[in-house]
Amino acid sequence: MKIIYFGQFNNPFSDTTEKHIKKAFEMFGHQVIPIDENHFHEERNRVLEEIYYENADLFFFHKGGWRHKVTPEQLVEFLTYVTVPKVFWWFDKISDKTVEQLPDGRRILRSDWMDLVLRYVDYGFVTDETFVRRRKYKNLYVLRQGIGDEFVNYKGQFRPEFAKDITFLGRVYGVRGEWVADLKREFGDKFEVFNNVFGRNLKDCLKSCKITLSPLYPANEFYWSSRFYQMVGNGGFLIHPRLEGLKEEGWVDGKHYVGYRTYPEMYEKIKYYLKHEKEREEIRKGGYEFCIKNFKYSDRVKELLEKINL
Image 1 (cartoon, rainbow, N blue to C red):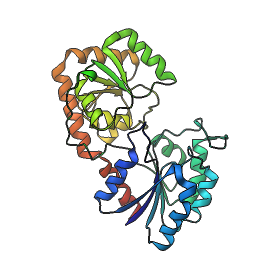
Image 2 (cartoon, rainbow, N blue to C red):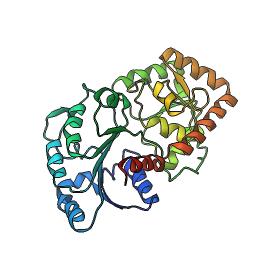
Image 3 (tube, helix red, strand yellow):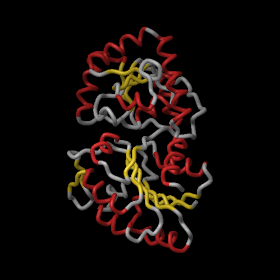
Image 4 (tube, helix red, strand yellow):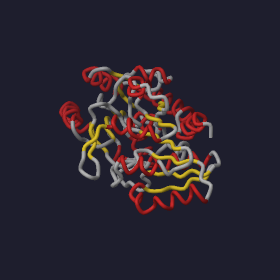
């Protein structure tokens, strides 16, 4: 199968999930033609030529380039010319209150984007099960993220620059700022924030630190970000909000990760597991093995292909 893949392939501040998904498609024997969102207007005729004259079988995208000068109206106008199955996979939390600014300066709700674009595609997949449960679209399904297949067997190396007791990996913005400040006041130099750590560096970081954390926001009972898979599936010991959806997916609190409901509980868990290395390492190993067995991007892509019957 030939897949036209419209995504963000050259983001230096991201793990570049598109590259993991592209590799997963190729692992199943499919040809993938990547089209970068930054060049949509220059490449749209090429995409249509691939569809009309070069026997492309699928048009696959994520957000349709709305942060790269592609408005939702331009996207759906383009989709009306696409004559092969059209599928998107949206990663972020969706709500009736979350607003995004478009390239032309307008502001749009993520839920409004869904209302519009779902009329023009065959299948939509999102990681936010809460949204799917509430809105009941006929062509919208839950498909969460995972970890890349590329470095699954690399266990990481100890590096002193990452050797901290407690870490948070990611950007600090909004309510995270207060959360990080509180952790710094409580734990001082034992706590450190690392940003833009990917690939082998991420494995090394998680090998070298004792505990990594995930905040309550933006998770809810049936939404969590790819951070969960990135941390656990790359060998980290993760303290993360305890969610019903994680339980339904097979994750066991105390076996694969350590869960909490409130920040006081999170602090208690941090202090306990800093003192209990053997338990910590057993959970780290259990989570890693469970994740790489079940939640690689090749597993997710297989599920997607089975759903769309291609």
